[in-house]
Image (cartoon, rainbow, N blue to C red; front, side):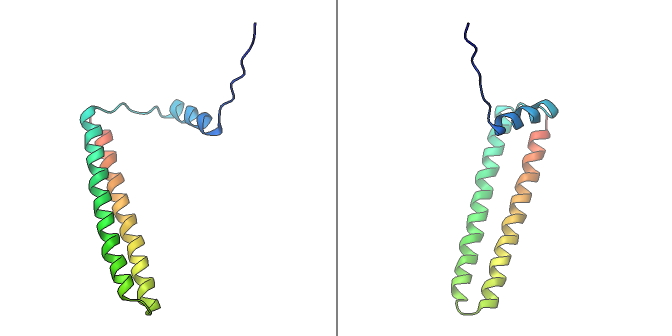
Length: 96
């Protein structure tokens, strides 16, 4: 009899340990749809802010301080929107 040795990647091993400690929840089709809609909505919001602020950054060419300030604002707004998205997604995942 031949024995087959299966090597698992570090990622696969980590996912197995994670699922043992906190098994993933099964989502309903409605929850999956809501999550997809949120992803789409927030991707559009983020893209809109990036376009607006990148336009302002381009207009501030030569004014290093203003450019830097606008870049920091863009980073902060992106993080804020990502945090909002994750919070809303978590509420959907926890709903039964």
